[in-house]
Length: 477
Image 1: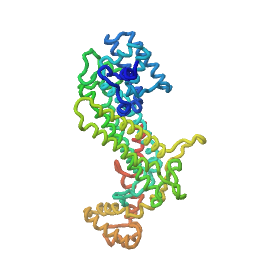
Image 2: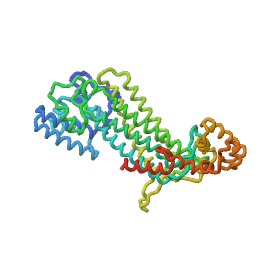
Image 3: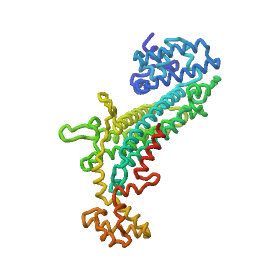
Image 4: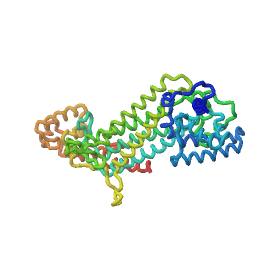
């Protein structure tokens, strides 16, 4: 056999072509070296398809048995690393099909009856992504549990709450941590919704128009644990909404991680000194020996742009495509795969960095973040964080809020001129701003009093923080 004949034989469409594909085009169009990660989904989907073909009498029981046996050997070969992936065979699907045919002969050729690579790849990606979404859900739960642990341990720690990065009101550090739990819980909900729309079967749509074979698509969907079948063959083979929607949900999750990263970076700086991040999550400087850099949060902040970029890339990929399948869609996999990898790695490391890890030598859990409660409380005293509490106090004495607001502004100005906190102004001075002010004002002007006063659902009072901790523990299991 000549080299020309050999090359044509290796291509699924070879009979139509009079010359082999150039090596440059092979490399340019091949996807096998990144889409081979779909091999388990490809074999699983093929086995479900073969089972249905046999049940429908489209292939014989003997062919079905041969396909099962061949696929079992291929599975073993790939797991052990013995499988030879060939560039000439372009992608994961043709590599597996060629090996199956080599092992079981004509039975392997009959497997492709009633399907196309178009519906095959759409099915494989959905099956693979479904499993990844399930794992991401577990990782999100782990991160939330780590944050809940920190919140419970620091429900009584006072942190300056900021707006515009200016000291605004005192909040519980535990309450602050639970804000991220809420974000990640919404992320988990989004992934759950994406999973539901991902978990639908394109197989049986063939190239674009369906097939003349009497396939039982619902049977295949049930075998694969899918929630239903795609109802339009054109849409089924060309739809990548699920990948875009997944990457959108991943982008939001990374944005939430990036926001947390920004705060960890700020809090760790010498100017704040609110926290320390364990050495195992930081690096030093090659020139400045005093440095300890928060590389993990910084890199996560940077990787967020990478994931958001993948979202933009997928949207752009799809925007100009006419129905049905186009080769453009080969470009959906690398950004999707990288998004999954980046998100999983980031969730794992943040869960460990926030919650700590068990020391193998001692058996004790070592925290990844330590909190400097004294530094946080000192910072909360710098910005007149209880000014709103004084306004609320005056409202309860009968002043309209706008008048109370103006009165307190004068009091803050006086405190600034005396270089002291509102709680340090003498009672006589405070009464000079309004006669209704009494000695009990100092309770509301204290940081602890301000914190405890916000004992309302969703508020920052330690009692509310503990109630929320209990709710999240019950939800997360």
